[in-house]
Amino acid sequence: MSEVRYERQRTSKRGWKKETPKQTLQNYMQIDDIERNFTYHAPKNAEQVKKYEDIRAFAKTFSIMLAQAVPNSSELDNAIQKIEEAVFWANAGIARHE
Image 1: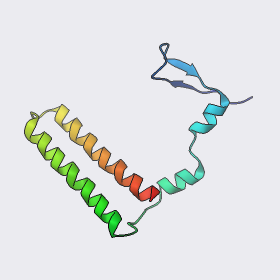
Image 2: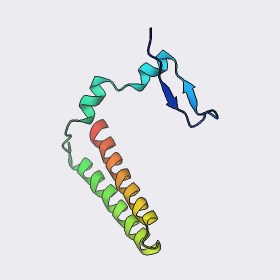
Image 3: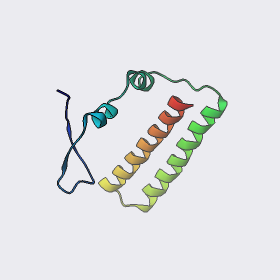
């Protein structure tokens, strides 16, 4: 008997949607993906390093602007944390796929 999972679906009005086994298999990461995601990726060239620096500089400027415009609050903390996450994922995308 094949495995059937239930997941919360944003588009479902009832909340839960039964997935077909084919959909379930596509949701699991492949071993190659896991290997790639948990391996250190040193910058390959100066161009990659420049991209990382540009992303961090833009995020820093945006974070400073927010800190000056938004009252000190949990909302400000959350906004800056999301910028940090965006930097992380952007850098991960460069490291993993270039």
